[in-house]
Length: 406
Image 1 (cartoon, rainbow, N blue to C red):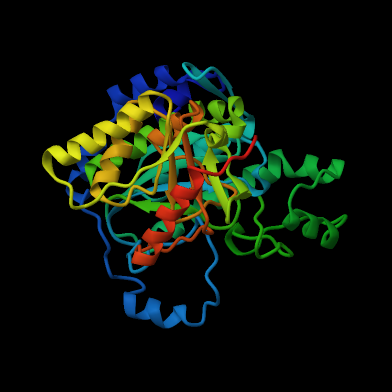
Image 2: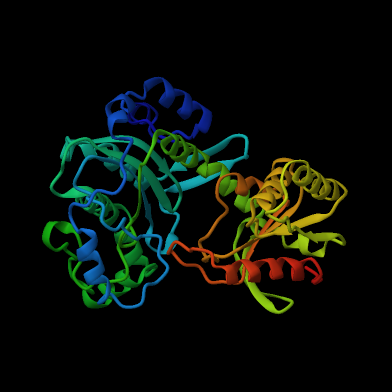
């Protein structure tokens, strides 16, 4: 559910349906006209430029997979539209609960969740240059979209730091006292604080940004850092809005189908060990076929080859492919669109927090898609080599022959 600030003030804690909220947001949203002129936000080289970035990278140590990496070279102090994600430390469901059905998901906020919601919508009071477009509260995290309409010295990080400071004050007032009193200290930073400040008043440091004794890799209410995406075009903005509004439904679906929508690791199949997401039972299908389509095929020859694979899939065969060549992409795309079972071999792996994206989510939840990778996850853009392509096609062939029970 996406919240509109005016509507939220009317309804308070009452749980609203996604349809109620979306209808009101569509009717009352007035900001998009202001930002049409900045839907072109590509990479701006203010702030840390590419040269400085490359120099500092040499001293940064081994890069770890992270969902909180900044857009290298982008100037976050300039006009821009951003989607921001912040997660509760320890993934504690402090903001509320999602309930209902996939057709009518609802979220009921706690007192803390309502306070965090209000802090978000009040950001323009502290930064008039900022307009708040969207907010999606979830039990243990939130997504929001902000528009920095004028150059802002503190940049996006300063906005988020101030927001977290305000939320931290509310957290210390509503939640932290009970946690310390009952001994139910959930995070490493709070355990550190409890040990160092037993019987003392815990006070924030300069501007309330951190607490003395807190662990550098842990936060108080929120995890340190945040994830941000930089808007590039209007179509992307529409996808962002859909993603935010679809979050409650996706959570309910994950609860209903945890085996289909949660990542798995160390799955030994033939000569490789895989990680992945989706319906592993597809590997037990009696008929599995590796898709190989030559780039030399054109016109009627290609049409006939695609039709052959689709007919096999209609008859119960599971198609397996890394979908590298244009013909293979076409086969797998048509099979996917027809809701036929497919297994996709990927060059990039998954993390413990990975989840299917977009239309893949529904395909996995319906049990018609399995995504597998023999590689670990990386945030780096991967350029496929000829060796990669050969390996992935051999994996698809092996997966069409190996059998494993689940």
